[in-house]
Amino acid sequence: MKFEVKTDRLLLKVLGPESAPMVLKFYQKNRDIFEKYEPVIGDDFYTLAHQKKILDFEHKNILRLVMIRYWIFNKDNPYEIIGTLSYRNIVRPIYACCTVGYKMDRDNMNKGYCSEAIKATIPLLVEDFDIHRFEALILPDNMPSIHMVEKLGFKFEGILRDKIIINGERLDHCMYAYLADN
Image: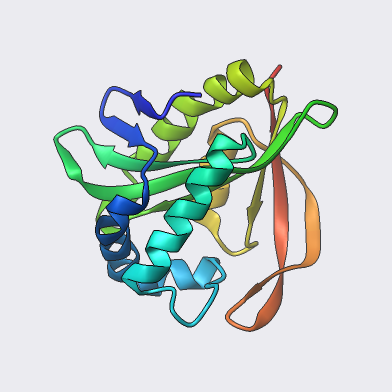
């Protein structure tokens, strides 16, 4: 699995605990946006210590081949995170599937960066992990995310009722899937 991927405009990198200050800055800057769509785990999420723990945990899981998270940088500024893209719950060989998650910095939304990152990395997961099915869970009112995955070829498969707790409320999520052989 590649720990660094370059596209026309982006640099995607796996980061370790030493990058926690940069990651924390990204989350703090975009807190109001992300908390609408993502569960926050733990009262100390917005601390340096917690971000170090998460990066260490994720790095260990990347080495176990059960997930990979790329942090997205603009090639022109490789020191400021503009987004993140993760492939979690990698299950092989029978299911050959994973869950796709992504977040973009408020100043870098609607520029096609997330689509570019997904287009560049799905073929890597197909090749390196033999992943066939990529699933994205999206809140029904998150129209920008729905439009993006549809443009990438993800298909709506239904509503998962009471799927994830966000801001203390268990919410329905739309299930979208992309099949690698399409």
